[in-house]
Length: 112
Image (cartoon, rainbow, N blue to C red; front, top):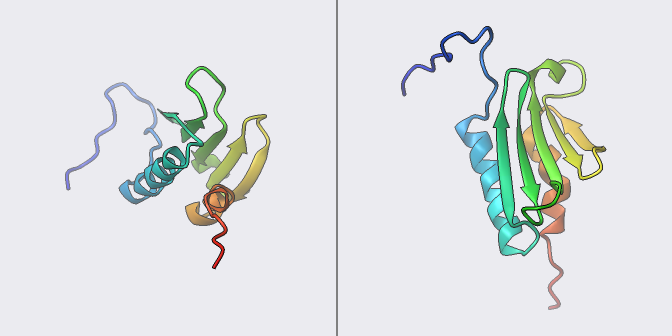
């Protein structure tokens, strides 16, 4: 791959998602859309962190925010899942366990 160059004039590099992280998040988003739970999303990249929001409807507040903050890496964990009210649902150093509460919503009981 190529080199990542900072935007000219930027004092510190921008935080973003790796390809594998973004693939995992977009995969979850697609399954939430297929289940009829989400209809829109937004992504933000900044110096302090990166965030992905999942919306039930475009005109509402996001239902969940998946946040990556490098400043929290050694204290609370790199990742956070934040609900609509701004409460932290789960924190951690790995993306998988942080997304677990959303993954559980997609499980369906099948009678055999």
